[in-house]
Amino acid sequence: MTQRNPDTPKPIEAPMDDGATAFDAVAAEQASGDATGATGDSDSADSAADAAAEQEIVSLATEVASQKDKYLRLLADYENFRKRSVRERQEAELKGMGLLLKGLLDTLDDLGRFAHLDPASTDSKAIVEGVELVERKLLKSLAGHGLEIVNPVNAVFDPTFQEALTTTAAATEEEDHFVAQVYQVGYVFNGMLLRPARVVVKQWQGAAPGAVN
Image 1 (spheres, one colour):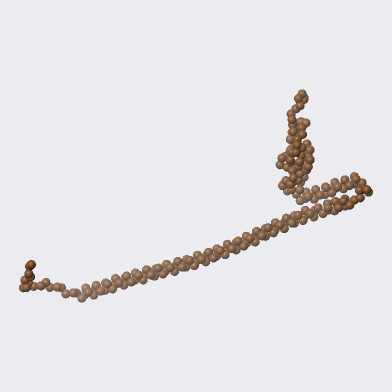
Image 2 (tube, one colour):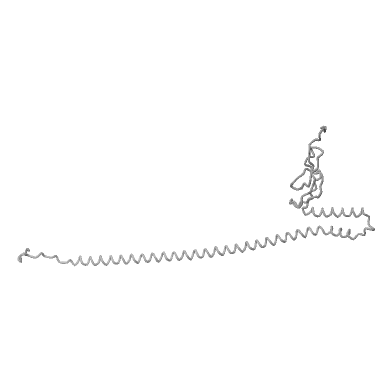
């Protein structure tokens, strides 16, 4: 082991500079202050974000309530419109039926008079003429409300408004598919078929053997 010579001088340690010590203290304090300031700024930013989010929630809730109110009002208006439409349609139907019945009152009066005639003292011809008059008045009244008679005698058969009950031979080829007879007239109301006319349709069977054209 090597021993130090006691006569060898010790190294001189440099004394601590007071200025450096003060600088280090100030730097440490500033760093601490910066950290504290950064934390404060972060907390402030978080608070501002929370406030903005809360304000947005309140705004959205207000908008939702407003839209819900508008929807409920619209729903109520539609329900009122639907009820009013049903009521008006029913009133229109009743009014139409009333007008139709009003037009039949005179005919009912005529029928009532004929029903109370004394057959023994009434000429049959007069009765027939009276019934025909009542029929004409009735049909005229119904025609005023849109009723039409389908009576296609000698017309081309139309399956849209006619029903063929049977067929009969046509005398010529030109008469093929023409109506030969109407068993029962049909009726159309404002373009809507109430009952088809029941008819007999002519059908060309071809020239008879030995016939001369």
